Length: 259
Image 1 (tube, rainbow, N blue to C red):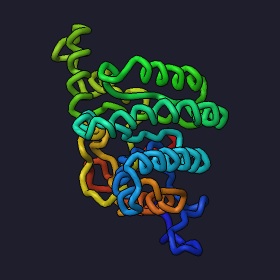
Image 2 (cartoon, one colour; image 1 turned 90 degrees about the horizontal axis):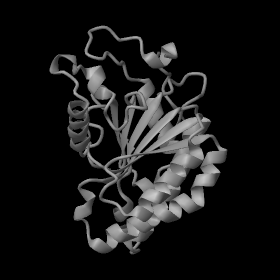
Image 3 (tube, rainbow, N blue to C red; image 1 turned 180 degrees about the vertical axis):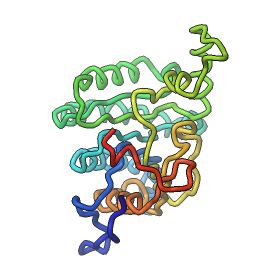
């Protein structure tokens, strides 16, 4: 199914009418541009990260309103430890603030929170906050928000192989599906739409396995400015794609089939 060309709202941004849109089942986002957003305003980078949290909350609600059941965001990569110690420390503190401020509200809206990534390197306090968020929302099913923190796509594949080996899976039985069950995002289908904000044209070690057939969408919009109009523009672009999954003729998407 393909949509008609997107209409425009008063600001000139595309709108996807509900009756024509192909809604992706799973959206993944590299939330890039917080620091540059702050620098453009001569503000500390920490302010950009704070505004990035606000943008995430807006986007979660927008996905709920549009009936998108899975959203995965790249919050902190395994390479981000190379950033200045002060910035990393403030990011960790922001995790605690975000859990305290928003988890209850998101829980009331039917959002389930899952943390994906290597938990060993973060403090016990941060791990406790993650546990609180996951426990408080574990029975929700309207939207699953997976937050990739201290995550890398290569790490994910390696840890999946290690776990499979530890479980004694014979080489002949290590199929794509079997290995996929060990990946950090095994609770979600592969992303249909992969969005990166901030103008960079790369996926930066995010969901390397899962994004094999994702539709990639890049925007110059810095993450703190991302909102409903930008999400709708990405969905409109996605709706115009013909997804072949390696075939010749357009494949019937699992989305349109409702599976």
